[in-house]
Image (cartoon, rainbow, N blue to C red; front, side, top):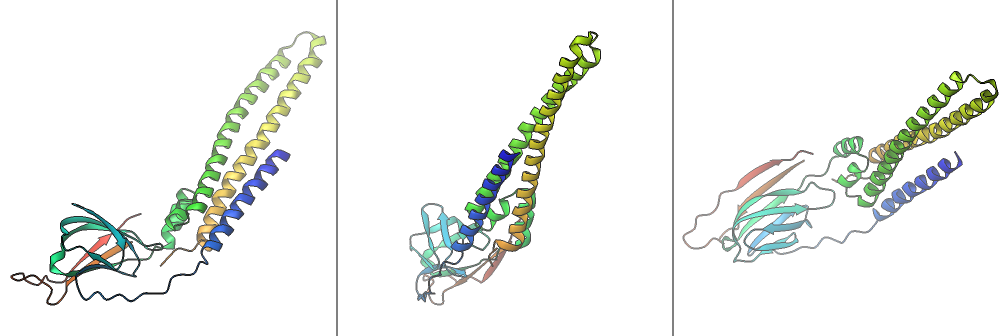
Amino acid sequence: MRRLLICCLILGSALIWAIRAEAQSDGSSADPPVTIDTSGGTWILSEPMGALVTLGGTTRVSGRTPLRLDERIRGIYTLRAHLPGYETWSGDLLLDSARGDRYTLELSPKKRRKAILRSLLIPGWGQAYAGKKGKATTFFLSETAALIGLWIVHEEYRNRVDDWEIAKEAYLNETYEENIPARRHELDRRLNDVDDIYNWQQGFNFAAMGIAALNLFDMMFITPVGPISGKLSMSPMQGSALPGDKASPRMTATLTRGF
């Protein structure tokens, strides 16, 4: 039982350390906003700015919004935009950088309810969704270790119960009186073994439930979830189209995302 308490203290200390480390990292100062002239060329913008954009197609382009595209980029590209605290936007775009169009991605904030649902299913999943990778790893590995330990001691518990049943049968069927004390001693020893492993089983059981509960509490009240859908609006830059081209109409596509 003492070893179980030591393991629980070590595990609890690791969880508290991870939570405090994540909380301190949230206090980092953000860079001041920068105003950039987007009056010329083709740009990919986002609301809010600063999203990491990756374009995959004939060539691969990546950068943070506002991102100006090379005039040679034309064709269908797969676009992904990621910003901490916001849902990842993904979709296919037909690009023609020579037109000088402007593409604006409106990113939607992540929702706490989705993070809670994830943590309810798998400890640490909600923290990963919220962008807290270290805390997510700690909760997931701790819960996994507790469940593996529970499975191991459960199998050992069954084996020791079987040994106790054998000792009990031998004690009840003993016909020689001089052997009864030894049989009784063996029966008591097997019973003590069952009690010991039962305590370990209960300890791992409580540890698994405690980690799951702490993980859920952390996701509900401690871990911040940033500000599950995405929307793309595209409008041409006035006077930037090539000769003979017609101005592209404004278009809006709504992207519904599941969890």
